[in-house]
Image (cartoon, rainbow, N blue to C red):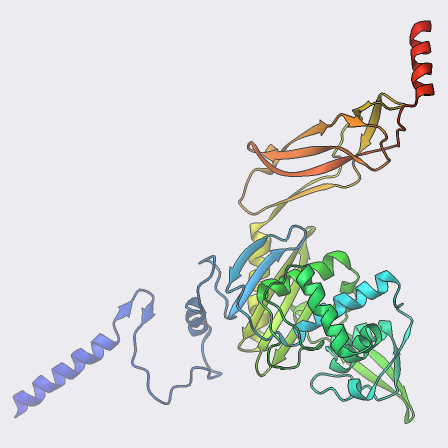
Length: 419
C-alpha cells in the first residue's frame, strides 16, 4: 500500500512540473474558473504579455491593446503603422472631429463668424451623455460652442451648431457624409453629429486619421481649443447667470509633452477611443486608437504610438527651392523669356532611415506659348534620392507675358533691321 501511494505521489508531482514548465519567456498554467483577467492587482509584466498577442499589426515591434489603430504623419498623410485600420467600429465622440471640421468650413466660407450667437433648441438641450447643460433658448457664441465641443465634448453644443449650419441635425449629417466621401473616408457612415451610440454609425481608424489630418492641417487654430485644460463659460438664462467649468476630456495633453490634441470618445459600444495629435521638431503626428479597454490604456497606447512615429521619421525641408533666377522660353510672346518663381517650400518625410543629405534637385522648364498669365505653371523642380524621384514643386510665372500682335511683330523686325 505504501508503494502504491509513493507511485501516485510521484506521478502527481510530475504532472505539476509539466504545468509549470517554462515555454520561451512565458509560463504555462492551468486557469481556474474563478480567475479574473481584469483584476486591478495585475502586474505590468502580465499586462505586457496580454498586449503581446493583442492582434496582428504591421510592425512586430509595437503592440497596442486597441482593436484598431493607425499612426499617420500629418503633412504627407503617410501611414507608419496600422492594425486593423479598415475595421468599422462605432467612434463615440471622436465623431466630433468631423463636426468641428464643418464648423471651421462654415467660418472660412463666411457663413458664420466666431462672435455669432447660437440659440439652443429644445432638441439640442435634450442630448444626454457628455454635455454642458445648455438650456432651451440659451445663447452662446460660436467661439464658446467650439470650446464646449473641443474641451468638454458637449453633445448639446454639437447639435446646436449642427442646426445653425445645416438647419437641422439631419441636414448637417448629410454634409458630414459628403465631406467624408470627399476625403476618401470609404468606410465611414455618420448618423448623428455627436457620436452617441446609434446602429450604423461607424467609421475606421484610417478614416479618423484622414479627417483629423484635414482638420489640423487646414485649420491649425483648432489646437487653440484642443489644448485648453480648464476654462469657465457663463450660462445666462431666465434663471439668471451662472458659471460652468469646462475640463478637457483628453488627459494626454497633460501627460505627453508634444501633445496638441485632439479628441477622445467613449461609449458602452465604442469602448474608449482617441485621435491623438502631437508635434515634435516640426513633424506632426496623428495616432488613432479605437475600442480600447479603458481610458488609461488608450493614453498609454497613444503615447507609445506617437513615440514610435517620431522615431521612424526624419524631415528634409528646402526653403530655398530656387537658389538662382530661372527663365522659361516664351513662344510668340512680347517677351522672349519669362522669369519663374517658387512660392512653396519643399518638404520630405523619410521613414526608412535614408541619408537625406543625398537628396538632389533639378529645375525643369518648359517652352511656353504666349499669352502667359502670372502664376501659370512653367516648369517644376524635381527632387530625387538615390536616383528615385521623391517629389516636386511647381515653378510659376512671376509676371504675365502678352501674345505678339502684328504691330509688335513689326516693331521687332524694324528693331532687328536697325541693329
